[in-house]
Image (tube, rainbow, N blue to C red; front, side, top):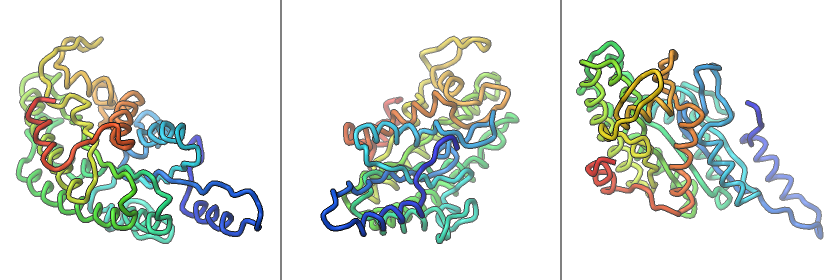
Length: 304
């Protein structure tokens, strides 16, 4: 990474130094924390460099929050390839003195209770990606697979976030996210690809509602990234250079991810990460309430 972010070990060392400051010395403000959790979107993975870059939406969130709160430090725990199962049980990334991303986050929240201001999380997309694997070759999504995974996603997210809320306490702002639908790019190929795009947009609505409902069960808000990417807007055509006229939702996937480039990669690009950060920030700061249980269905029904 091009810059150094706080680690669990250095956070503990900083806390120790503050606790042994000599009597009569000017008190140093205790650090506050933003903890980011999730998958490769949280880490900023980019296919052109095949590595995590420092302009992930989590980095953009941190920069904006820190401008208002200079003592804020970023605890970056996201793990590329993470699913709800591996986030709970481990297997993708190694965390010092912790068995999983959830374990590392819970420990940090417990040990720094009262100092953590914000927690963001994006998880669940990788759970269903394999159900859409036929999309690239013109196959329709596996609805049975998606249905099974949605039940697992809801249970795992509700369980994990309840643990995190209990560890961090009620004064932390906890916000999860819905996902954009990279398979919308299949619309460009015409024919069956357009049927697939419509089917995956519907499936993403259900995934979004599942995530928002699970979040709300643990008193988390939800940043509606699916709506920010205009998931359901197959109207309002946009002309893209080298591609032609496409629906609004397809255009946003082409603009903000790598799906319409030779990489054909699902990850958000630099501009897309800014869009995701801009969707999170009002919910994290309380400027907008975000999605809770029952509100997801309304936002999806009105075509947002």
